[in-house]
Image (tube, one colour):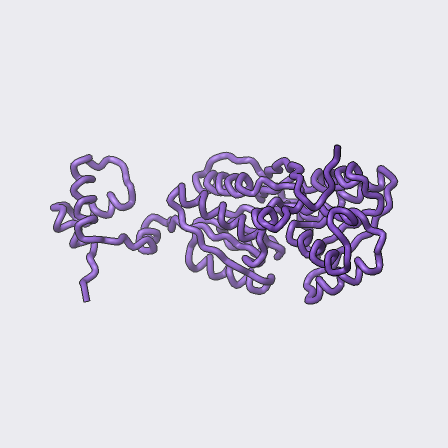
Length: 328
């Protein structure tokens, strides 16, 4: 078995001290170009891999950011995680993905992250914020704002998105509208999608019905199917996200309804998965990549003691797909 090279081996081959090798690895200033070249050559020749964890113990930084999401199975969270990892990689940071699947596991992750000393956390969370603040780890929230405005948050303009969905369904000729969604007891920005949708319809004096289950639940599809059966006159649907929109389309087809001829459907998110179906879902698009980059930017500002925006609300856009009719 080949012996693993150490920092001492690198120092010996480069003809410098172990301390100098350490300074080079940690990108410290004030090192001669010739010394940098000698150490780099020795590292390459010995195939030396620096111990990132040990280096973090000395510098108080691990170059690791944790991303906490409710479930990686959901296409929105998976795509958002992709953009966060991509953005962090450009800054030479690693991503630690934490898939919580419930508030209890979320708290367990927070405790683990405190012990492993990650540099910061980006989180889509529905647990009490006190657990995060008590951890002392720099923190940026996604899609959830707080009374405490010192807690940075990045979100899209969910209320305007709900408004826009209602407006577009009416423009497309819908008269009996429905909102399809789910929620939990924790207040978060996604609830404003329903608020925006309802407020617009009330203002325009339009008829609508609501399907909005409280989490946790185990039979969402069955209950949604029953709702659609009990409301056969629905001809326009706004779903809280693209995934729910796709579920609704499948159930409507199962019930003998044609989309968009009989029922028009608008989702929310603009995820790649919804665009790659046999026909793409019409949606209110969030700028996912920009949301990820804004969260990273704020976190880096916190880590470097630089000023930053406390809350960033990004604009949404309407993206026409095949689940709504073409309007002349």
